[in-house]
Length: 459
Image 1 (cartoon, rainbow, N blue to C red):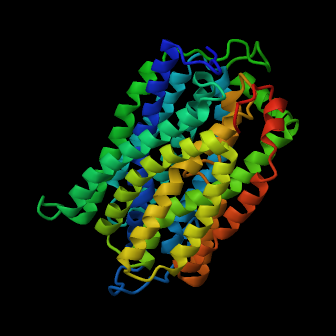
Image 2: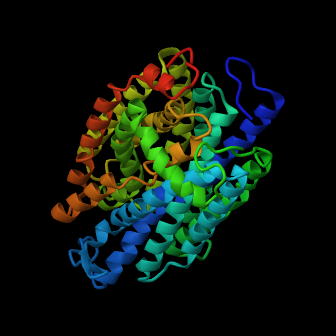
């Protein structure tokens, strides 16, 4: 099925879009509750307890952990783990893209990867005591599975929405994701604030919250899988048409590299996206750690902040979608990158335990977070050759949410050198400056023409 352009969607397309939106709802609960809010501080606390079991309250642990013989600051364990997951996942996801384009039913692959991720996310319930190593392994598995599922999911966007509809469809998906993530986070917030009255410690409440997020991910994935089950894969792959799904994918990967070199605007967009998205993902992924360890706020305060951010981001994604329809998605994304730069600088100057300043920071992040990511996805979809969506989105997804590694590595390294998260957060400015500068040089019209796609009315 090919999406129509410039016309209202057919009944079948409308149903598929409604089903497609729900995977943002499904996985965002894990991304928000586990990846963004709870796991970073929780894993850091376990690692700190293992390295410095007798640490006085209020003191920072400077005794390193030994990870495969390498000394690692406990406060840097989580960003380094995300870095490792990304490096391994980058290779894996590119291969997944080639396989997905040759799979007869994309929804089946979506179900497989979502199931693996939801199981790994649920098993985080058993990470306790000083067992930080199990938590790191499960985080790597869940992060890779999430990225793989999103390769398939993002590629489907090209097939259910025409060029003029993609900004709207992508923004609605992100908005629904923030709504779902926010609702589960609200339940987790209640659990954490009432943990003692319910006979639980804070650590137990965190573990139950991560378990529920993993189950939520798996259960709600059933909606897009069932709704998109009739969507068929590419009938005749352009490369190695007679080869099998796995065998032919290797030859297809080689051809993808050649195709990217022949699409300089697509390649330039990926390079720009790599930088500014690394900054976005690092800010999102490490903000809970920054708020608790550097600014001195408790878990319940940070949960409340992220709860607010989710609902602000719901509105922000829809607002950016409307702005894009008037100014074009590229200008909207550039504006978002500029705002992210201001957010990082402001975060550096937020005083310790200054709740009002923290709330202002949260509102700013919420407004810019969803729109920048949603419109980046729809922009890139315009630069992808038809029938090769998944393999091209595999490169995109290797750099997508929770899978950046330059940013997390820099964040962890600066903290290890300075024992402070303030210089670590402000160091991320370089990613927004480089990414925004490269994006200004992308000629979207030329890139769309080079990919053989139809030109949207506004870009």
